[in-house]
Image 1 (cartoon, rainbow, N blue to C red):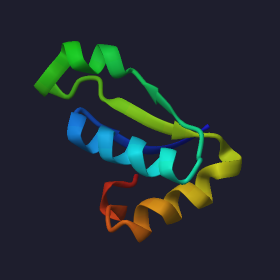
Image 2: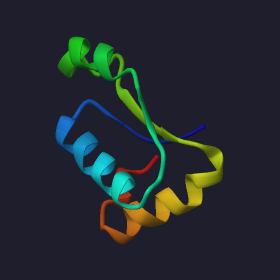
Image 3: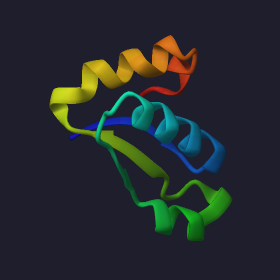
Image 4: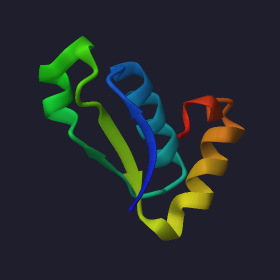
Length: 72
């Protein structure tokens, strides 16, 4: 799995999920629940991950949508 984005911002997570869904790219949001509990301390952030085979396509989808600056 390739990590694309790491954040506690629920808005960013929702946008990235929508873009990946719209591009039919499978993804997994790791640590979503614990990052909500940790909140603003940023000790543990949610990580949006895609299968390695989809990494290039996912990065292109986010870059094309002008949110490439969120990528790791």
